[in-house]
Structures are given as C-alpha cells and as structure tokens.
Image (cartoon, rainbow, N blue to C red; front, side):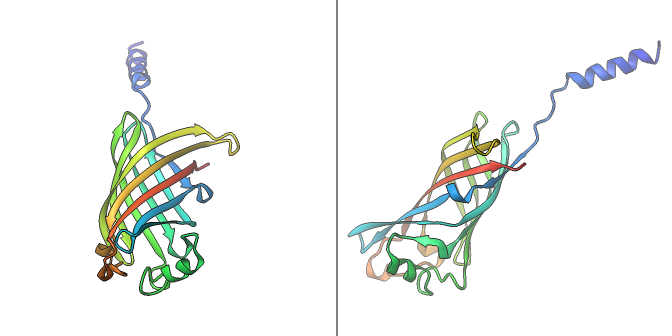
Length: 193
C-alpha cells in the first residue's frame, strides 16, 4: 500500500498536466497559391499587375504555442502579366534574369498572433540573388476541414511592400519608374498526412 499511493499520486499529477500542442506541417497548395504584385509603369502612367503561377513550400504552425515557420519558393519563369511580350521580357537578364536567378524565396517565422491566428511574419526575402529582411502582414487567416481533400486546409491573404531597387531589379528606374512594389499573396496549404 505504501508503494501504491505514491504511484497513484504521480499518475494523477501526469494526467492533470495538459498535453503539449505539437507543431503541424502544411504543404503549399500550388493550385490555390498565387503571389501577385503591383508595380509602376512609366512614372505613374499606369500600374502593372502580375502574378507568379508556380509556388511551393512548407508552413509549420503551432497555434497553441503561437509559433511557426514559413519556407516558400516561387519560380520566376512562371511570371504572368497577361501580356506575352512583357512575360518574355520580364525573365530576360535586364529584369528578373530568370536563367541566373530562377527562384525567389521567403524563409521566416510567425512574429505576431491574435489569439491562435498568425497576423504577421518576418524573415529573409531573396530576389535576384539579394537577401533582405521583409515583413509580411497576414490580413486574413482561416483553417477548415477541406470538404474535398478530407483534411485540414489553412488559407490566408498576405501583403507586403519593398523597393525593387534594393534587390538589383532596377530596370527603367533611370526613366522615372517608381521602385515600390506591392505584394498581395493568396495562399492555401494542406495539412500533411
């Protein structure tokens, strides 16, 4: 009886501690993820909008611990302005130079939450071989049980801005084009089985 009491007390103590939440891994759904951008044309003549059609990556999220990481890769050659000539020129050496720099990447971590929903991420953005810090604002975030995939899916609308000249993307800046680029990213990811 003397041995049983301490064992029962230890078992009760262990059972009363809540289980620690584990990080969950999500794979980017490339058919529902399209980083898009807005950039100046001719110093205010118009705003050009484009998107990238090929994105991959992994998000790890621990909603209980309010932490997680992001690792995203965008294929530069998948750029799409809806204008064939501009698409061809964009990947040329004087703009994105896709042959030399085939990808853009973001590697970061979640830095702010509203309850268990991430609202901000910060990390390293690499474009044209140049890496700089970039903050992403997570404007909307939601997870659901995906009715067709039969597993959890999370999605978000994300925004950021940067100066393209900081990344050596200086095409036509000497002609008065503005260097600011606005990113608007729709992203969906599926929980890894």
